[in-house]
Amino acid sequence: MSLKKAVLKSFSQESYTATVQLSGSLKAYLEDIAVARNLPAAEMTAGRKVAVIFFDETNAGEALVVAVYT
Image 1 (cartoon, helix red, strand yellow):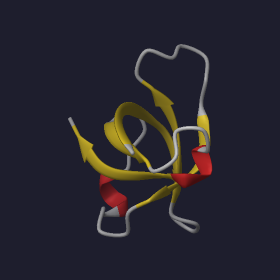
Image 2 (cartoon, rainbow, N blue to C red; image 1 turned 90 degrees about the vertical axis):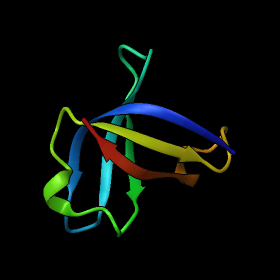
Image 3 (tube, rainbow, N blue to C red; image 1 turned 180 degrees about the vertical axis):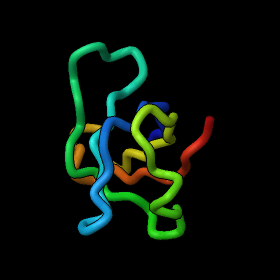
């Protein structure tokens, strides 16, 4: 398990998933990453910094956005 910093690129309130760009990665985006339901949708605006937990670093489908910060 690892924790990484990222920048929120987009958020889908319907599916509660996000597209994020990991810090240090200029071109790679991770899409359809689950977002913790305790995070208010109003806080999920593009450009905000987020913390992402990877339960399995080889499978982005196992990642979860757990925090949003400025």
